Amino acid sequence: MNTYDYPTNAGDLAAALSTGAALVLPGALIAGSFESGKGAQQIVLNPATGGAIAEFNAAAAAQVERAVQAAQQALPAWKARNRLERARVLRAIADRIEEAHDTLAALQVANNGKPAGEAEVDVLDVINVFRYYGDLCAGMKNLQSDELDIGVSGYHAQMNYEAVGVAGLIVPWNFPMVTTAWKVAAALAAGCTIVLKPSELTPVAELALAGLIHEAGLPPGVLNLVFGAADTGRALVQHPGVAKVSFTGSTAVGAAVMRDCADRMARVSLELGGKSALIVCADANLQLAVDLAIGGAFCNAGQMCSATSRILVHDSVYTDFILRMKEAIANLKVGGPQHGGANMGPVISARQQDKVLSYIAQARADGLRPVAEGSLPDDASHGYYVAPHLYADVPRSHPLWNEEIFGPIACVRRFATNDEAVHVANDSEYGLVATVVTEDSAAAAAMSEALQTGLVWINTPQIIFPGTSWGGFKRSGIGRELGVAGVRAYQEMKQVLKNA
Ligand code: NAD
Image (tube, rainbow, N blue to C red; front, side, top):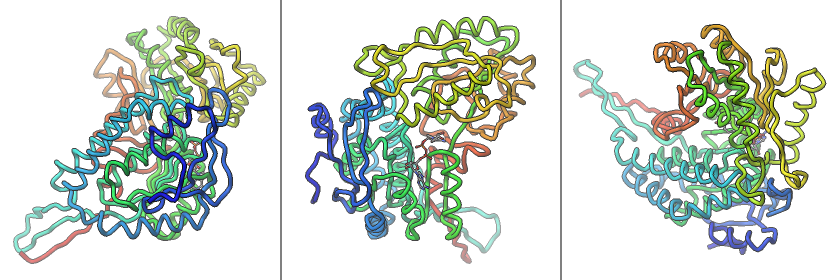
């Protein structure tokens, strides 16, 4: 039974938001009950207007403690469920989310500021991921154990895959619900119970998602939530009852999380930052290259770990590419839902806006001028808008070229050979993704092999299918999400060898 009187399901949250009054949200969901937080107060803003839409008190350390205990208590029963039972629940969750698709998308827009089309794609991804893991549980006979033919007579080996225990999941604000679904669905498929900490900036859609998951029949205590910022996250990561931490966020915080896990050898997966390259070869379909560059750099206002913000273009098509990019950037309409038809939203917060604008100021101070700059709505001061910027011939030593900005800023440089393009693309501390645009399949294959990234898109937009993989090389992270690797990340492998 809820000890909490405020809306916690998707429909009620949307209805309450539409009244224009700021909502009071819970700070935690523990063993199936929502409760107020006992920690610091947080105000939740709509980035498109800068107005407050909700407030909550963060979960205090004692509430994190109780959430972990609830997950520990729920663990034996959930872990013991066979894969078909897990499949049934995961599929029911997908169905429930599908029914609430429009409401969830609206909540995503209200809390994150992204255009409706982008929010709808997010919700579809969430549905697909729960459905994928439901189907995986149903069809994957070796999800929980496997017979192994070791080819030695007299011995019989069995490989068991056991839930690692309580999973502490921490996610950022740029794709609320999506980064959550990738972790929650895989951890549930593996048999883990969960304490999830969403970003303090985007609790609304995450709360609605958690409500739907419970309505779909997940037993109380299997998924617990603690809302809050770094303090709440740290309390979760450092809790000795958390066997596995899966973190998505910045590389700096990811490194701190890994250090916290090291002492007790907690299992850890990290999905971190990026500074990815898009390579436009001499034979590229140029209109496709421009479309992929615009989507790769400015979708979600550039706030994507996978943003292809370093664009490398072959000498022979460079001038034409820049001309087309100028036109495409001029056609980007920046704004929020109130501006009608905007295809690029605001950045998430005043802090993020300041950070992005400081890179633009630094570029100006260093004599760099954008070759293309988009425009802003007239009332842009109400909300956190940044115009899209494209800089050309930025030195490779400059922060604009090297650092993850997480805003609508892209840099373009020319290259003479594909080897040079790959070399420059790999010259980064990150290694999350890359995009290659070429009509030459042999060149594409050679470049894919040479690129040091967890994913290479060839002539395709940034589509991520749930059955594939997600994760980075180098400082972009450790481990993989999605696919079979995603579920194995929440399991321990145990070998049982016996005389046959
Ligand atoms: P962030 O690292 O500041 O915060 C991420 C999450 O960690 C938030 O929930 C935050 O409250 C929490 N947190 C902060 N300090 C913590 C601590 N010491 N211990 C535990 N938790 C803590 O990142 P952000 O600004 O929310 O998100 C943007 C970053 O996320 C970018 O660097 C982006 O590249 C990265 N990201 C990566 C992926 C990926 O899949 N590789 C996906 C999305 C975002």
